[in-house]
Image (tube, rainbow, N blue to C red; front, side):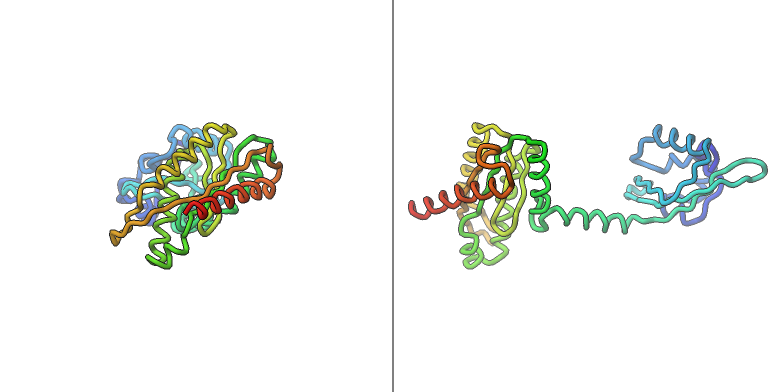
Length: 262
């Protein structure tokens, strides 16, 4: 390519990556084939690198090709002299599949497989950050009641549906404002802004929504309930363990009260 990112020569493989015929690429700006990128930024950086003769090494560029496919290419470059004119010689390799796998691994490292919520590792990272910044918050611990009974009566798929139903409620209540995670099994957690009135409102809304029976794919209906405990930072503790212990104690007390009422 020249200093204006015009493609002067290209191998047939590039046509596959860009999803256009090779003849359409030649004498055209490479920008014509890179969808979903900031074209002004690309040209500024490209021309600056060309002027300073900055060689690329393991540079990744992600874009949408003409077929609407997301592509990531690994790029290395050098500068060559052709008939007295400096050109940039680029070597590209499609690493889309490898990047997709890498992103999935990253996602699963911090997310629960069944629900897509943040997992225990992500939760501990988030709460540690809040504690380091001494950011006030409320920790809400939620336990789905009688999950074992649901699994034994209707099967483990029903238990999964129950967990996913709770997840949907948590996500909608959190509404990108609060933080929700699944710690494992039937245990969930939320990190809420330090507003006791709002916390109480959220708990009431979750319990109200749980009153509507869950209809399973086989058309059976199950009634769900949850026990909830809350701890407040810094009033109830200044470490993860202290806050978790208080919230867990209050959740257990509510669970016992529910059993005695029944």
